[in-house]
Length: 246
Ligand code: GLP
View 1 (cartoon, rainbow, N blue to C red):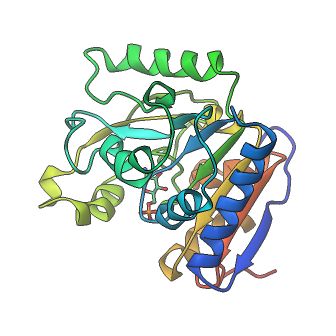
View 2: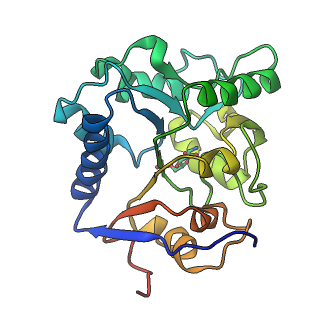
C-alpha cells in the first residue's frame, strides 16, 4: 500500500461504560477548545454509551456542526431505523445542537449521486472534520465501506454486504426490510478528518479489531486504512481487545 503507515494508538478500558466515557471526554475537550468544532458521527449500538456520556457532560453543542457517516438509501427519514431517526433519539433531541448544523446524507434525495457530491461539498465548506468518531463492522467495514472499497473513495452510493444486512436485520422485522444500499462517506473522506476515534466493544468485534490493528493495510479489511492516518485513537473494552497480541 502507498503512503506512510502509522501504528494505531490503542487504549483498553475495563468495560463499555469506561470506554464510552473516554470517547465523550475527548470530544468535550475538543469542544472546550473549539466550540464550533466539526464532528463526524457514527450510528450503531457501539456509540450509544458515547452519546449518553456526551449528553450527561452538559457540554454545549450550540455552535458545533455535525456530519454523519452514512444513511440507508430509500428508507423514509421518519422510519425508526433510518440513521436520521437514530440521531434524533441519541443526540439531536437531547442536546442544544441547532437543526441547521446537523448534517446526514439524505437517503431519499431524488438524485442520490448528486446528494453525495453535495454532502462532500458541505463538509469542505464547513472546513473539514475536526474529529470523526467511528465504529467497526464485523467484516472490518467503517461507515458502510465494505471490503474491497477503494481507499480514495469519496461519499457515494454503495451496496451493502449480505453479512452487514444480516447483522443489521436485528433492528428490522425481517431481513427483507433491510435496505440493500446506502450513502456513505468514502475512506478518502474519512482519512481527511483531522483526528479519528474508533470505538469497539464486545468479543464479537475482537477479530475485526485484531485485523484492523495488526494486519498490513488491505482493502479486504477496510478499517486497516486507518493505519495510513497519523492521528487515530482506538478505544476498546477488554472483550474487543481480547485477540490483540501486544
Ligand atoms: C453499521 C454502521 C457502521 C457501524 C457498524 C457497527 O452497519 N454503518 O457505521 O460502525 O455497522 O455497528 P454496531 O456498533 O451496531 O456493531
